[in-house]
Image 1 (cartoon, rainbow, N blue to C red):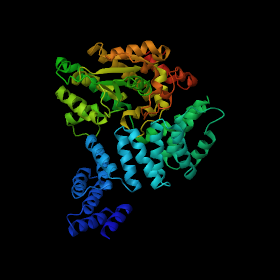
Image 2: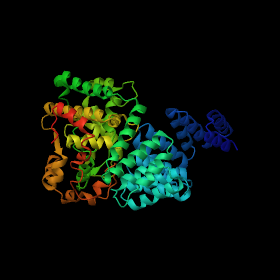
Image 3: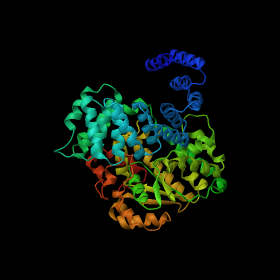
Image 4: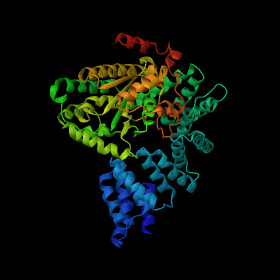
Length: 520
């Protein structure tokens, strides 16, 4: 009775009533786990994650249950305790859960850990248990898409839209799943959904989906939808390019004024990491697939391990991972500690025992200086793509809509400004650490795949592996917007794509040329 009361109170958001019922459960029998678990969930719902974890651990000590372990895993992910979260999720799955929510929670934890293949079966079990739950079905659809089960993903997305024609997430996912044609596209359906969209977030996703499909068929109306969506979203974020400019300034100041102490230091000598960095949408996923097709290399995905290592060791009070305060404080950190912390965090995402792993977080270009000091034997590959194609591809892509990393991308000129600072920073790193970073041209890679791939493999200190030329046969999961492209053989379809909107992109071109950046 008390358990039912607590769960009902949680469902309706009455946390005080939930806590009261849970406490009564604990007082009634302190050896039973349920009261502790529900107290923990109540604390978590109140945003008190650090308080919630020991309560749920107390429940598990009194007899592990799948639901309790799954929820513990979910909270540990929020605390960035990835290894502990993975262990808890595996234990939950081993206890054979019986409810859909627990299966879905386990699948979400595996997804956050980059184990997309491992997430598929829990998500399937969740959908089997509750076929009408569209959130569970969406998670299964996304996992299916990430793991190459494209037709299965489409089937689930269409099922979602049959039940909820305005589901913006499903519309967007279907749009990016493959290239549309004049004869086969979803444009009429998307235009109808746009007229019915009520929430700004739904309108944003549907406009992006519509712009993508319109661009696929060569319709210039694509730019109009992008422009409107981006303008509105930038206003909602309250973004100002000065925020990013200050971070670039701080990085350059730190490594300029730090002198020799920041250019030397005994870091961690591990040779395993290969960092693939650069502006987003420049071929980083392609290079990651090429490298991870090698017999000695595993893709660990887009890790937050380096930003988190620097942030935690800098011990700054701000809630953002990177800001001016954190950058300036990071110069005093022992580089070996950064290397050790990075490898400890990254280790939770290495699911196979290979000699090397790739970390494909594009924004690690901000951390090249720290990588050079903390992991002196690591390799760093920076993708370079035509500046206008880079600006256009960033502007038209819907990244994680609340991520501070990509806030610049919702304005054409902010994106152009960001590119110039990226370009300047890479030149800065090259002067400080000559030859450290392999600058790899996307255009040269698609024009001469074998020569550039051999150059890449040699730079990474790897023996040649023919499988690197057939990267599109790599069955590993891909959780980026490039998933469809990297499952096809290499091609030049994306080269010069910006010229389809040359007139609309003219302000960006003029700005870049004024900054001394060559367009052709």
